[in-house]
Image 1 (cartoon, rainbow, N blue to C red):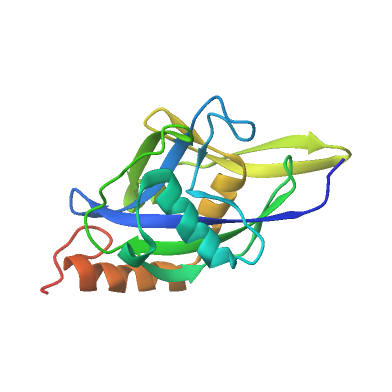
Image 2 (image 1 turned 90 degrees about the vertical axis):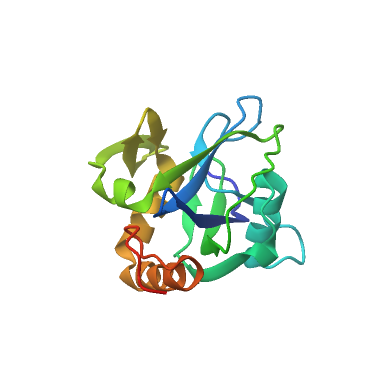
Length: 189
């Protein structure tokens, strides 16, 4: 069944793309031992002596080259279990303060996907499930332009979309850094 729980953290990074606040995800390389080929947030295993936030910031720099000092952490989302691998993942929401200059670690990341938040909110959600021992685990599935977001990543997205407080703060920060709100409207900055 399930092994001991291991700690991990991810960053849910946002940027402005084509005037709209957008969420950044990655497609993992197919040759990786865990979660190969899946769509996920930058993140990974928490190292000894490391806080979950430090893990998330270290991992985004290692995976796609965005430095911690270029990210404003907006908030955090409730932990999410990755049942098949036994990781308990702590998600943090961050806004990249300028235009991101992706430096992709090709050993881990096949592709970077940038999805406008408004598109993500409009995607019809399908619910799927799998059996783990005698337990059935459900998760939402988001299909966007040929990409399938599912599992723990989709559960984190779903939790994020329910967090009006975090989304409101993200909107305020987008105004500060970009003079635009989440829908891309100029805010008179």
